[in-house]
Image (cartoon, rainbow, N blue to C red; front, side, top):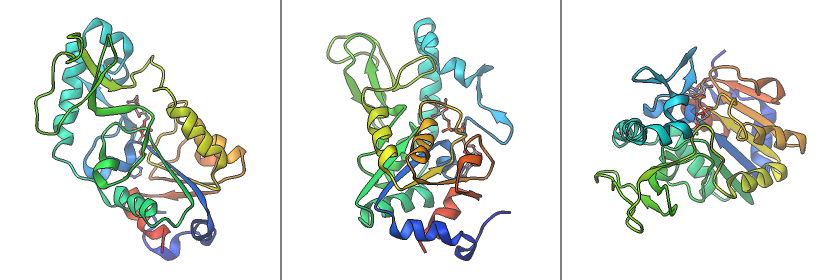
Length: 248
Ligand code: OAD
């Protein structure tokens, strides 16, 4: 059943939302789907770029083997993104943070698209980096990539090649990102998981940590995921339609 009115949101979730002090929101590609960003998985499909599955082109091995091809894939994705805007779901999360209704509000995203920040979210824990940054393969300096500018080819500090500042398959997460997120997950009373297939670890362990520490767990996704059975509430539908309903 697709939910469409506030009265269809389970009362317990609305009560938890109204009374919780510490809240963690974990987002994945699905939150940006209604902005026009293609997801990696879902609907029975997986993304492919020039015949290569996305987990091959987005891999640590590919950076070593063919860095220009990796850039081509990320340039292509940035090119799509620069014309896209945050949707109602990104904006709802900005309100949740700004209204200060919660004493601790943590937003963790697996997305590299920057749409949470574009919408106005601050202090976002980016578990997988950002498509809007480049990083030197040698000295690890990072450089912002501006929406309308051509990206730099070489590191301004040491002249070495730059690569996307994104976590690729076969790589570890940025220092501290998971630790910060896991600490917030262990402390939160309400954990809302939005638009992720919950297949990629360690991000997918955050709701498990929250639940194991007594949090109320809510998933928002048009499809069931491996997390669904662990959840207290599963809202089946689109983030852009459902997030507004929870707070009313
Ligand atoms: P996926 O593409 O794996 O999953 C997207 C999820 O969003 C699916 O479960 C869809 O059903 C759901 N979805 C689609 N439209 C939605 C909507 N309008 N509202 C809510 N949900 C919707 O994306 P992630 O779980 O984020 O890693 O993928 C995890 C990681 O895998 C990504 O961060 C990326 C990829 O490899 C890196 O780039 C390192």
